Structures are given as C-alpha cells and as structure tokens.
Length: 251
Image (cartoon, rainbow, N blue to C red; front, side):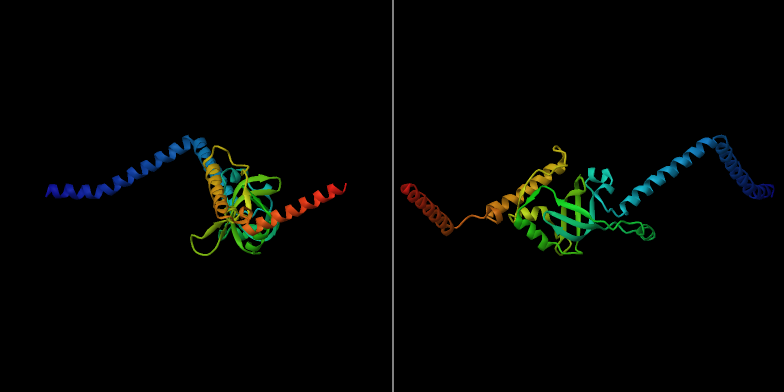
C-alpha cells in the first residue's frame, strides 16, 4: 500500500515538475534575448535586408524593360534569356516588346508603371545579306512571341541569339543558325562574349557548322553557278573583249 501511494504521488507531481521546467526554459531564453537585445535586433535587420534584396531581384525578373539601358548589367553578363513579342523587322533589326514573367498578385501592381517602348534586337554573330533581311521579315510576324538570349548591349541595341518555336515541345529554332544554314548571311565574331568562355566557343562552333552546311549544299550566297551560267558569262566577256579590240584598231 505505501508503494502504491508513493507511485500515485509521483504521478501527480510530474505535470507540475514538467511545467516548471518548461517555464524555466522560456525564462532563460527570454533572459538571453534581453541580455543580447542588440544582437537580436541586428539579426532581424539583416534578415529584413536580405528579404528586400531577394524581393528586389525578383521584381527585376517581372519588370518590363522598355530600353536596352533598363536591363541590369548582371542579366547581360549571365546571358539571361528574355521573352518578347514581335512588332517590326527592319533591315537587320528586330523591334519587340518585352514580355516579363507574370506573377499573380504582383504583376498587376507593376503593370501601370510598365514602359510601352520597344527593345531593338540584332542577331549576334551573323552578317545578313539583303535576301537574309527579306527572309527574316517573312519569318517573323507581328505579335509572334520569341525568346532572346542576351549577348551584348551596344548603345540602344541588344545583340542576341533569337529563338522561335515552330511547333512542338522541342522545336525551338535559333534564327541566327537558320539564316546561316540557308546561306543568307556570313558568320562574324559575336562581340560581347569573353573569348575564353565556354559560351563563346559553343556559339561560334554552332554558327560555323550552320554556315558550313550552306556552303557544302551550295545554298544562298554559296550557290554554285551552273555550266550554262558560266558559258553565258564567258560569252559576255568575249563580246566585251572583241568590242575593245575593234575600238583599239580604229584608233
């Protein structure tokens, strides 16, 4: 019987002991926080600043850019890909409207301040022929959405790799490569890429490979003249030579 009473007493005492221990822990934590109030405030301030920085960077991703100068330098350095809607194609330039990432709840708040101006994009690493300019205008229709990978910013223009979807999940076509593949341009150094970087060699390797295919197939500016065309050229030269000889004899 005494043992049962002691056990019962212990059972009644345990909750009170547990509550006291919990209270002591809370009290100690509160005391530590009070003793190091400055440290706690500094940590809170640091976390708040970090949160503001993360938010600011996130807002940049959903901000609509209306000029090349609006794009952060780190976007160009990291060759970020952006989305745009085609408005005009003039010569070797594409004028498009930047379409930022949409975030429910935040994007509508920023929409009122967004610029209506257009970005000017050029195809990096490609020198277009006149036929290439016409082809580009035929391929890109107003309101069509494309992706453009930032390579360089020069004045108010952006040199980019431009990608357009031609149907299907994996049918993104790089217009820079396609123009060269059709023989509608020549490969030129893509300014803005560090010469020792992986991206520099990867981009130029792909562009040169596309140009090589056009040259091998005789497309566009690499088109080989037929035998008949060569004969006509020879005949024209022969006529001109004969005319010059007759004129010289008369003098």
